[in-house]
Structures are given as C-alpha cells and as structure tokens.
Image (cartoon, rainbow, N blue to C red; front, side):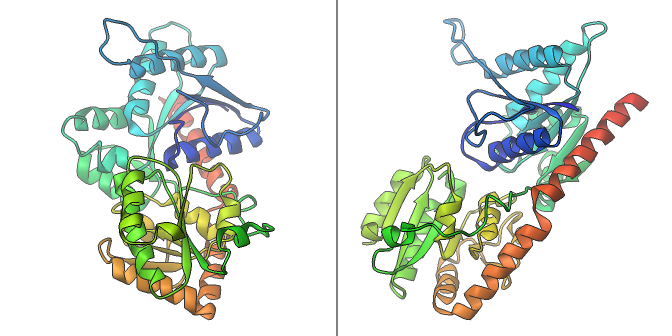
Length: 381
C-alpha cells in the first residue's frame, strides 16, 4: 500500500506512535510518506520505503497568524498526487483530520485522479480538551465523521469520543505499541553510578510537561518518598510546567536530588537504570511512556485515569491511585523500593505484558487489516 501519515513532530504520544507506525509499515514493504511541520523526533536515519515531507507555512502580512491548516492540506494534495497515495492516516483530529478531508475534496475535484481514503486516529487531548471546547467541537466532530475510518488508542478514549462529541461513526480501538527489542532493560556501564552516586534508588518521569501530566505532582510524590527512602528523581522532557516543577523542587528542599534532563532521544538507557516510573497525570488516553517503562521492566505508579487501567494492572504491573492521592502514590513507590520481592515480581510482569500484548508485531498488522478494510469499502461503494 501507499500510505501518507500526518502527525505532529514534537515530543508526545501521537507523534511518536505515528512515526513508529510509519517505520514499521515501511519495514513491512509499504511505501510510507510522513508529513509534518518538522522532522519527527523518532524518525531516525534513512529507511527504505520511508520518506519525509516538510510542510512549509509562509507568513503574509494579510494573515495575522500562519495558515498551517491550508498549507498542510495543500501538501497532502501534492504528495497524494505525486505518490498515488491510497490512504492518508491523520494522527490527531485537529488540524490533521480536517486538512486530510479538505485535501481529499480537492483531489476528488480532479477527474481521473486517485482519491485516497482518510483514516483518523484520536490520541487523547484532541478529544478530552480540544474536542470538549465549544470553540472547536463542531469542527472536530465534523472531521471525525467525514473520515473513512476512525481509531482510538483505548476503550476509555473511545467512550470519551462518543460522550464529548456525539459522533455517529464506528470507532475502532487499536492500542499503542512498543518495540520490545529497543525498549528492554540492559546494562549501561557507569550510568547508574553517575545518576545515583551514593547508591540511591532512582525514580523517573518522562513527559512533555504539559499541565495534564502534572509535573509538580511528580516532584511532590518524590519529596514524600525521599523522606523514607534514599532516592533520586530523573525528570525527562520539556514543556510549559518545567519551571513550576523546578521551583517546587527548590521549595521542598529536594532540588539537589532531582535531575532535569530535558528532552532525550534515547530513553531505554535511562529506563534501564530506573526503579520506579511515576505518572500522576490527571488524564491519559493510553500512557505510552508507561508502556515503554514496563517494557524495560520498570513498575509504574500512576493515576487511575483514562486508559491507564487498560495498560497497568493494579497490584500486578504497578499501582494505581486516584489522581489526587499523592500520599498513596508515595506509599506505593516506597513499597516497591523497599520490598525486593514485590519489585521483582512487578518488573517481570510489566515486561511480560509489554511483550505479550503491545508489540509492534501484534499491533501494526491491525492497522494493515484496517486499511485494507477501508479500501475494500471504497471499492464496494
């Protein structure tokens, strides 16, 4: 198949999964074209069958802001014509699904041209935040319903989609996935000694530091843990809540035990030396970072929110608590750090779940089958 994938380039689950999906599809013999405003962070070196197309959005005095929706739709038209795309897979409802559907209308107006089918994957905040906002809800719903196929990454997000937008289309659940060969616990000589020079236990948090991730709650939980267990915290990522997390670490007196590492391309080495992953988000559609931690045998202490209970089994692969129960999260982290039997059992179970349920070998064929189903509907029509 010839497939176009439209995604965000920034650090975040939707862009990461879209890029990893493109790479996996190309390795399985498909022609894949990724369209974004910048090079996606996980794209990596050249791969046969995989191409990147940058969307340029020029500024004009007439426009008070860049018109990315229009330039993206125009780029989709150009690539679809040149490469004879059969599928345009939009990751995130706005503006990607809107642009893909607009591009399809342009292509349909040209006699004899190939008109690709549009598949939209919803990833979370495009529904729970943007889709719930009256300023965007009608356009989000329209973009979803105009798509030939719609998927979500969890049953929780599927329910949110129906509740928030009252759409009438069928929504298919295809969960996120992880490359368990890349994300596996490994020996990293000298890294643990550098990050925990006094032999402290290591907690880790990885996110885009947006308000929904609650970076300050991570620091709060860690401060509670550190009172009981010698430990250090790795904060990986960047975003709007980073300054607040730094300030809180200073005010709680744990700044010297918290290392803010910024955005990192290689996460498996850091996860390989971590003991516990903290994810006290107020909402998660799936929790890709948690799955990557689990694949590296790191138990997760997280919020019982959104799709996280579908990935993390409470008491088996980690512990789940109400989002505001920071003391409960701290207690669960302390238990993992002080009871080696519990930690070992959860670490092994975490790896098993990632390997048995969420590998690219299991999930990517579901997308291939869905594409074929959508193409079959088009031929029948």
